[in-house]
Image (tube, one colour):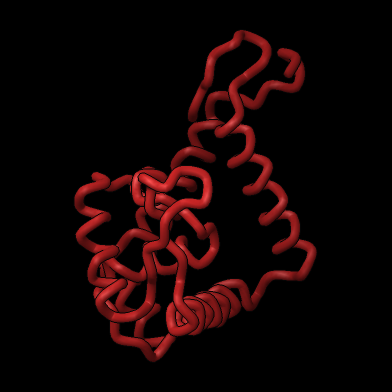
Length: 163
């Protein structure tokens, strides 16, 4: 990015504050409860993100899943044991490394993950009800571009810079 195209410090601060507000809102325990009620399911709120990510990204290993949710892998392993016990996730040997186990959702797990996704969509529709289709598309495109840029090492200086 050239200096002429660089966003101002004020704009970058506003962006950072907005992202922090969104993340804080999403991570609030009471919002998880609203989502679970909307989905009409009963599941410990620590478990449903693991179920949804396993459904989206599976097969996936516990260490990778733990990294995605920012938790210790031993904690995630205990939580996955509960999802296995509930019949929502199964552990299978990795086809590439028999010592590793991969997580996959069961049919019941896929159904519950869909219920959560549908509830999340209904809540998002309510939040964005005054927005035009173009505004939503612009937001989605911009957020995707920002997330991708944060995840990609910056070629200009060879370092990974985060906001």
